[in-house]
Image (cartoon, rainbow, N blue to C red; front, side):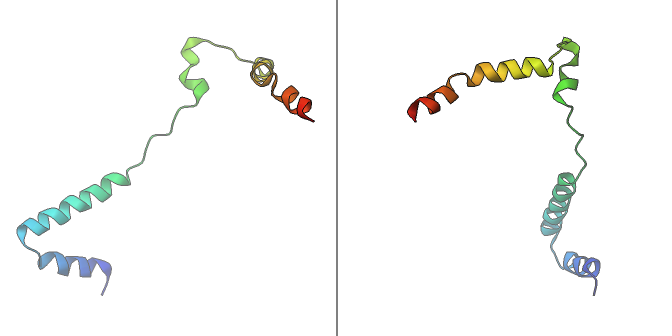
Length: 77
């Protein structure tokens, strides 16, 4: 017996309220599998702001952010 046949046999044995609950659950499962739209990249989402960030800008920001951490490590030796 296939899963479709088992499901149909089970469905036929249910009361009206139970059938409604089963249909609601099936709709819930169907809604979970709908395709989600892909997310836009951060660059694409902020494109309208016309901000240009270069690799050099990122390098400088990282150096400023981490300034002092490596010195503290070296001082403890």
